[in-house]
Image (tube, helix red, strand yellow):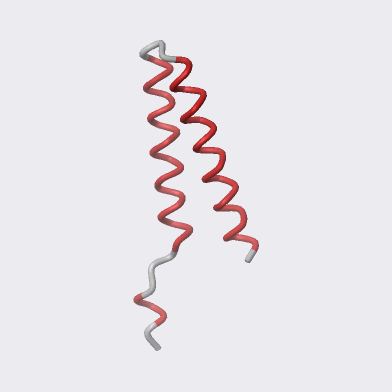
Length: 56
């Protein structure tokens, strides 16, 4: 009955994933390739979590 009020964790992860990719893009534009690489790695970890939630 109250399931409609539960937040979907996949949506939160998706937003965080998109945010990390945007930050990585900004870092690349600014020439900071080290930050770009680390932010991209963090984004990929979030993407893996999203895939795990979708499978479950």
